[in-house]
Image (cartoon, rainbow, N blue to C red; front, side, top):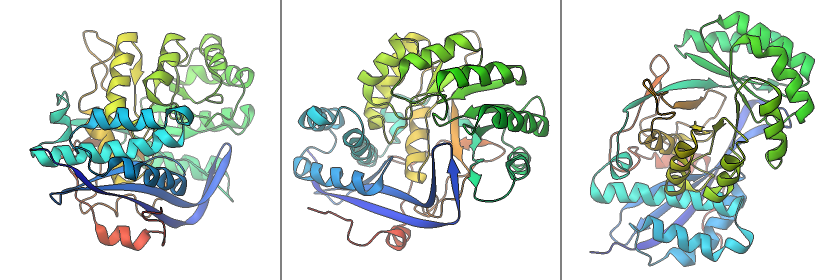
Length: 384
């Protein structure tokens, strides 16, 4: 029996923050999200999420809609190739691929529900049933001293049981170096510490900072320079000893082919809701394993995107292949997000820094429609 797609909806959600926060090149007063809902002729529903500008993602999802109605819902690779091919001329990167990611995740959720199996089982797993999470936060507030409130924030994460934290930098080499040292002193020598500059430096500055703080046992230096400039990534890798990470702004196997063949990064961080969905990210992960490059998914959205990342983490190959392979990490965003967990009937939480992979059918989550209705931006659903 062939089950076919009956409807596709894009839901734009938005919530104002209690206080704005920023990173190296931007700030926000709201959290937004674009959720994808796909329904089959039999009445089953799958959910996905798109990373990036919510309203723009919704417009692309709605452009996909006429090409999806009537298609076989279980044919994830077929649909991925069809949509990518139809929009390839202007859509090899960016919004077309982020929107395609949300559609793909929703189709995998549907597929798991149809076969009454978790996505990770359909993808050949699990290799693991729980993953170690690191805490992401430390965004800049409009007032106060980061040496005070950021340090207190990371101390809180350690008390909650997280074994690693990621620090937002990119505000100037000297100021960043002072904060990094203060954070390392606060959390002690054994808690993992990673840096994320959100491409706030050029290669010269990134190399100077990396060499200055390398003795502080830094796990990785994320997005030191703009994502478009792989040459500068290569320079930063050569010029300082901290492992270089990046890739949340890269897309598809073809984009990561360039990253991998140029050895531009030690750790790649595709976002499952951006780089092409579960279908494509598993291909990227297998490519990374062949190159001996580590894969740590970027995660910064709602519980739907978090569930997608966990299902992928359950089947990521051990990398690098050695006697005691390193287990992949989960990025666990702790910054304010009013509907991150609200969209789920049962939130995904950590226990002493460990997060269990959902074991229900599909993504293993149940959607709280009342929360979606509460946070949904009026008039942003199924715009023709």
